[in-house]
Amino acid sequence: MADRDPNPFRRLLALPNESRTKTVLVAFLVSAISAALVSGATVMLRPIQAANRAAEAQARIEALVRGVPGMGALLDETGGTLSTLVLALEEGRAATDITPETLPAALMDSANWTALDPGADIVGLGQRPDYAQIYLLRDGTRLSLVLLPISGQGYNGRIDAILALRGDMNTVAGLAVTRHAETPGLGARIDEPGWQASWPGTELRDQGGTLRFAVARGPASSVHEVDGITGATRTSNAMTRMIRFWVGPDGYGPFLDAVRRGEF
Image (cartoon, rainbow, N blue to C red; front, side, top):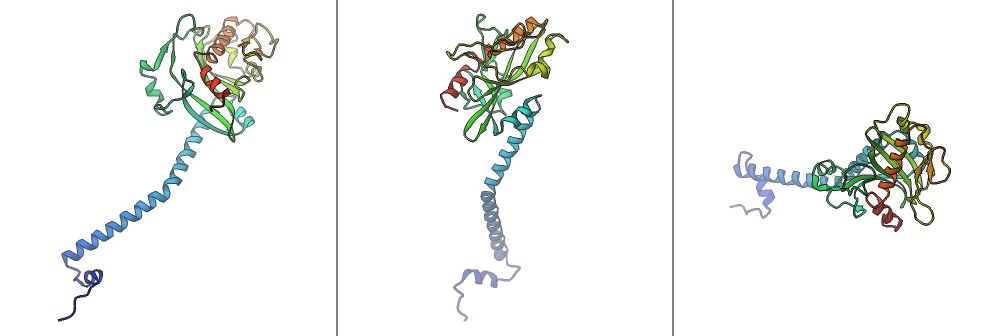
């Protein structure tokens, strides 16, 4: 009688091809090896997939911002890497449980809105969202630009805009009005590039920290003013109130303070 081969793999191969045992074991081995290869490939490709998702997200962010008139040129001028975050306005910090993807759903919940005291509601909104999506531009580790969505009531309806601030959180880099219902030829001039060109370089506060920004009644007479719009006093005043509200304590004020402290 031949000696039993001590090698189990050779004994398996020696079995007839129609053997049920051989068929089951070969199928099991093929499945196990395939699963191991797939798992290994997944682990190896995971960093590449994460990098691709990050690149796609970055491209979407830049496309969104560049779609706002005037913002593309500002980004090109400033340079750096653009990112976004959802800000918890009251704390002035990044939200921990809300992302840009979940923000629209979160803002459909009335619990995520704060009623404004009539005395503080200089923009006429009645309430303010507790969260806002903002955009940050970094040159290396330095925060060089922030883009802040702002809104308020104008003469004929709501005005939406994006305010761009330099890294000192005091110097205006630009303004883009994204929606309004102001009077054509008068208040509607707020979306004209010529008027918006008077904004860059304007300083919100003086050296003592007092908020001085205003839309002038005529040509700007100080570094804290932008040119007024002839015949559109109410719209000009609405723009003044919008900026003052959103850079104040009920708007982005806590965030601006955190940036000045070096927390971003």
